[in-house]
View 1 (cartoon, rainbow, N blue to C red):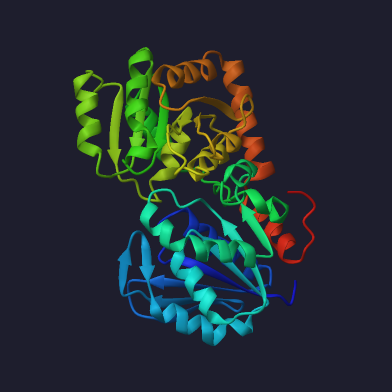
View 2: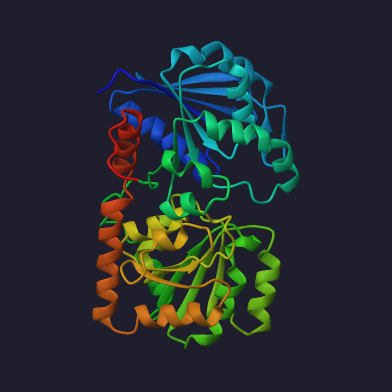
Length: 376
């Protein structure tokens, strides 16, 4: 237990993506260890404070509008100015221009930890306006935390501050023991004698699902690809499936709830992350699959940490991005023989346990706070 008081700052609630999940998991994980850890974020609803336990409060600030994926919340500025001096550390999560502006205007003089989840990639015009404030934040931070060493090394915005960087990989809770649940087996029964490839994500361009669908053309009939998720490219992707006559080989499952997901991870033989842009900075779905001892086929994306998460030859294989033939080749290689598959399966399980548990993420972050981290 430590007397530190920490505030997680940024993004919004409820949880809609990886950044918010990391913030929330750090808050709950640290508070359960007796560390005072609150979270200040923007919400579309009313401003309120929710007490989660004796050591954690979720402080929600009303957002008046959403612009370029940023929640505009004047109340975040006022609230942070009022409460910031209660904390020894403000742990700010990037990218979030609103949170950065709130910190800049707060007058806070204490320690700042910057969590660099990703560069700003899509909002080029926003970046032009935000860049001076972003530079202030980088200089203001005592330490800059990244989720993979590759992303920290490759980000053009962090070139001059490498000595301040430290890697704390994202961690998740291991699957619960639900051996009595037969949902995974029921899915397998729908595809008897098939090697099931599972993939999951929003149906958007950077996920590269078009290449995963095309990869089915280079797989024989023992394979079936199941893609979970919804999004704007659904009709386009279904048209591609129909065009190539892959209806029996590729299935778009639609949105899958948190309750449904474990069954698909259990049922599949292999997980595939086919992303093609650096927007995919880490790929939490990879470690979710590894937690179920499922090997991963991912892609090598310049500047991204995806192929670091999936250790080549250990937890799976990494294919050239946008290369359907390479994806199919990797899938065939991992499933080519039971002994080869068993090695990758065990490698995925062990890499998860060694690197990507929630407990490890929380302990690593606490070491950063207390200045006890040993390695980058």
